Structures are given as structure tokens and as C-alpha cells.
Length: 360
Picture 1: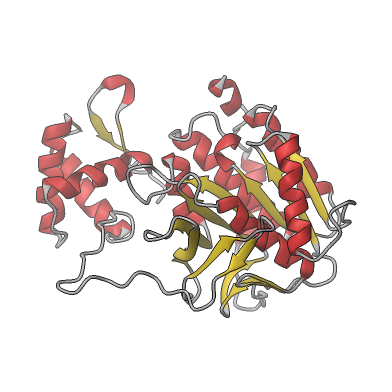
Picture 2: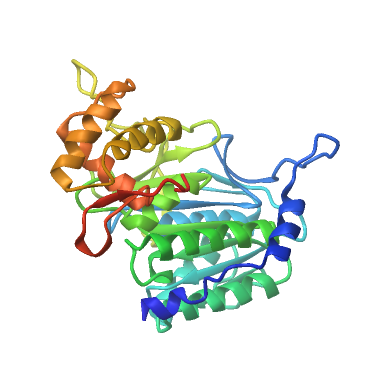
């Protein structure tokens, strides 16, 4: 089934490539508008038109409640929790796509959003369209969402609650690249903002699968929603990745009306006294593309293919020689990242080989 899904990816002709090449050229003689800012937290921009963002968190961290606040702020064109929405006329409509829940539970989310926005919850809002896509296949979901995006007038914000369900295999580089490319195409073509939701891995803070890696790499903002360590009824929101200025984390609880309620004066857990914790090693953020290329070309200039253990040893030596100190513990996430980005590949259980034309 996944193979059928990938058949859609097709090459373009030389003539089409020339047209796209010319259309993509920048010129200092032209002016380019700054992307309109539509979503903020404490004055920090978390969402602009023409870009996409994401919320990640463990199960039961109340990610959907948090995103409901973003949608309510957009419908209100005002403030809900700490989210401030500023959309111009012609961009006021929200498309909410849910891929996980039944229509019954989707309706509860829809009613909650309307109540948070101060709107009646017993009739449809002209500015909110809600799609329940649980029963469809990943490729059907993509087709439906694409048609809705391109054929909904005045659309400004799209929520995809469950982007994991837009692919068959969350660890497939091809599928992940395709859906992230779709997000970039949709946001640019329609000048909208898309906000997606994805679960975290159980064992760490990373977004789940290769699609999570791609989201972290390409998203304008990645919000982290997590339960407070000392009080499980409280959820905090912080910026895991943000292009703009970072914002002070905030927190909310669910009140007696089943709505998220801001906790004023919330402070994140202070660091324990003593030596500060070392930042977790991230081979994507802590090593430049040029350093990766130099080290990999040196390694695979000696041999065309390696077994895992000998590759690990060779990478440690090569990266260390260009000033990146590695040990065997750091080599493991490095090799995982190199595989996810298809900078190195292991085809059919064979040894690892280098892909010099990789896209970083």
C-alpha cells in the first residue's frame, strides 16, 4: 500500500524545470513582503502566513486543548490563554482537520472551541470548518485536505490534529519528505498558516518518527505541551524550537466547565543547584552541514561501504579531526540522523554507503 502511495511522486520535464528555475530567482531590484504575523505569545511571533508550526507532547498532555485555544483566539481575533491572533479580513476562516477521533468526539472539540471563543455552541460558525477524517486512508486524507485548502474562501489557519495519520510509515524518509513538502506548498500557494499536532517519543522529548525530525527541521515554531512534574492536572506550554524571540512558558488547567484556564504567575520548575545540566547532543543543530560533508567525504574516501561498528569508529575519528568531539554514545544519534536525512543509506541489510547528493 505504501508503495502505491509513493507512485504519485513524479519527475518534472526539463521545460517545467526551466520555468520553475526562472520563477524562483531572487533579484535585488524587486521587493519582497515580510510574512504577515498572525499568532503571538507574549509578543513573540509563533505563526506567520506562508509557514507552518507544530505542537508536540506525550499522550494525555492536553495537546488538543492547547490547540483549541489557538483556534478560539483565531475565531475571536483576540486573546485566549496566552495566544493572540491578528488576522486581516479575508483570512479569518479556520479549517480544523482531525484524523484520530470519531465524529462524536470531534463535535465535543468543536463545541469547546466555540465556547472558548465566546460563540454559540448550538449552531455552526461561518468561520470554522471541521473535518473528521478518521475512516480514510493517508492518501485520501491528503487529497481531501488539499481540496479543502484550495477551495475554501477566506482561509487563514489550518489545524491538522494528527499529521502522523497523513503517512503510512512515520519512519519513511520518502513519505515524511512528501507530506512536509505538501505543507510548504499549501502554505505558500494559499498564504495560510498550518499548525500540526504530533506525539513525542515515550523515551525522550523528540517528536515521533522521521516525520517528527522533518517537522523540527522545517517548522517555524514547535510548541512543547507537557504535564507539570509536580501537578499532573497542570499542562505547561513552551517553545521547543522558535525562529522568533523565545517566550516565557505558560500553563493551564482544565476548569469545571471542561475548558482550559490560564494559571497566572506560573513558574517553570527551577533548576537544581550545582553544575548546570549539559544540553542534549543534537547532531543536526550542533554540527553544520559543511562539517558533516567534510567528515563523511573523508570517511567514505577511504572505503565505499562500512559495517555499523567500523562506521562508528571511522566517524568518531573523522568528526574529531574537524573539531567535533564525539564518543560512542554520541555516535549513535549521529548515525540515526545521517540515516534519517539519507546522507548515508543501508539498502537491503547491506553495509552503509554515502549519498553525496543529500539534501540537508
